[in-house]
Amino acid sequence: MLAQITPAQWSGFTVVLTALIAVAANIAIVWGLFKRSDRRREIHPQPLEIKEATQFASKKDLDQLAAARQADMKELEISARARSSATYDKIDEIRIELTQANDATRAEMQKGFKDMERALGRLEGKIDRSS
Image 1 (cartoon, rainbow, N blue to C red):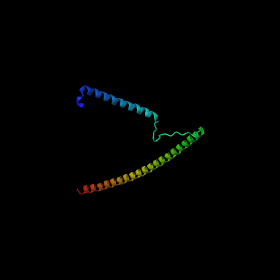
Image 2: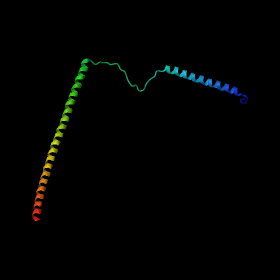
Image 3: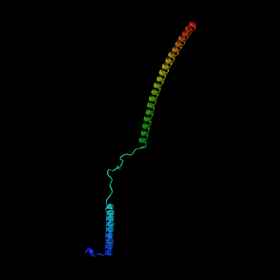
Image 4: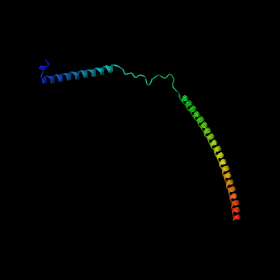
């Protein structure tokens, strides 16, 4: 039976088969669209839950919050200034200690140079006398 089919019949058969597949695909797409429109889209987990407020903030409440926030900021600024003041005091103490240590080292070096000059002067005097 298949041996009796001509090439023209085969091409017609492939065209009909392709058309049936295309129709079936279109029906599936339309069916999916209708089915999807019936469902409501739900997102899980819900990113935002909307609840009705039982009590609203008044201007007085907001002013109190602003005053409390301003007082907190002043306290933070005062404590930050106290910390920086203590840091600067410590830096000044260390600078004074380093300056004193530097002065002491410089004085010791000057005394050592003076002692060397005296010793060299004595040696020169002895060398000059002996020659």
